[in-house]
Length: 152
Image (cartoon, rainbow, N blue to C red; front, top):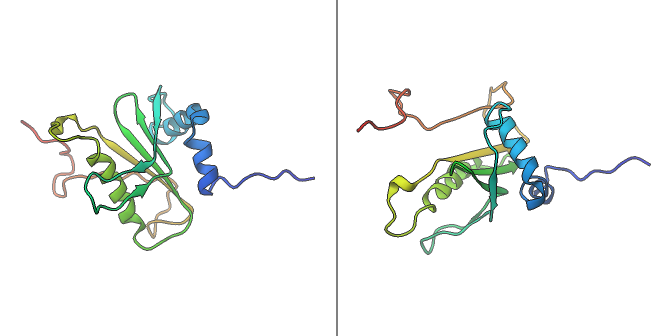
């Protein structure tokens, strides 16, 4: 009798494989492989509730597949998308911006904000003409992409 495996691209399986407490070490290994070229940069993380409650009434709720905080304070949000739905790339940016913005409470200083990494795994070609399996994007200044931080 052939073995039957659950499809890891389904929401339930993906969240179980990468977003449950039992998969802590698998998630660390997975993120080290994709984000840090297989270096052991991530030694620990905390898997968070993937529900991103809005702080302002009327703002859209959002749910992520996996959300974690790395030991250096960075937040990683991971989404698996099988269907190429209209506006998906905007949803990725929205969820990343929301993860960034909900870090602070009233009266807290902006210097407390930590980076957010949005890791998106798709079962379709997200950007036409791309022949690479792994693409990395970063928000940069248009005319001076070498400048990522403001100088004091």
